[in-house]
Image (cartoon, rainbow, N blue to C red):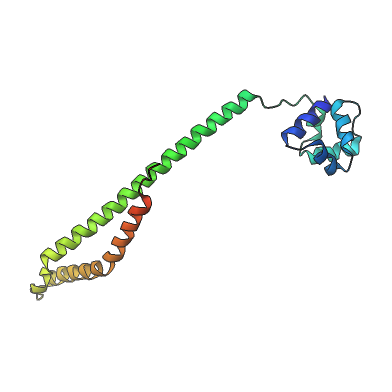
Length: 170
């Protein structure tokens, strides 16, 4: 039982007999004898073996350690594949949403610019003696002033975003 557990755990950890022997400061033949059941490690070496294999001593001395079966690995592989496909689908969905957001921003900027050009700052001819008209005119003027200064940068950013988030053909 001990011999089978040592072999199974060593292989599960991806260690060769030589690598395990180096960790325990013994020769490879000692590991081979333990795994064949021809000898057993003393208590000090059993503790060192437990540490080297990162396994409790009780597990080494206990019941047979089951190797993962091919079916278990296949099931895990299939689950990982499903998760990977879900993550890929979510990423494509997010990319598509962000892409359309950039397109919407670019269209909105073009539409606002067209409206502002068509109206040609109508608030400049308003009577500012009326307080309500003065506030509204100030608001329109501030919006136009801010839009004219920021829109080119936002538009270029939206175009860059559209290009970066476009769907790449495979």
